[in-house]
Length: 65
Image (tube, rainbow, N blue to C red; front, top):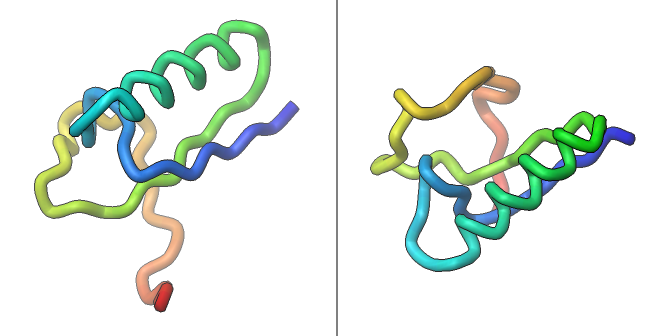
């Protein structure tokens, strides 16, 4: 199954509260069970880009009001 998670945070890249830990743990568990998982996050200025594996630029001018 192909699963896309859209969240406001994901540990350890962008983490403020418990949601980041939940998104990380759930996506890791689903991937271990054989599912293809992708996570979509907002591009914050303070993100830790050195901890992102497989980062790709998909859109350069996407506007979301």
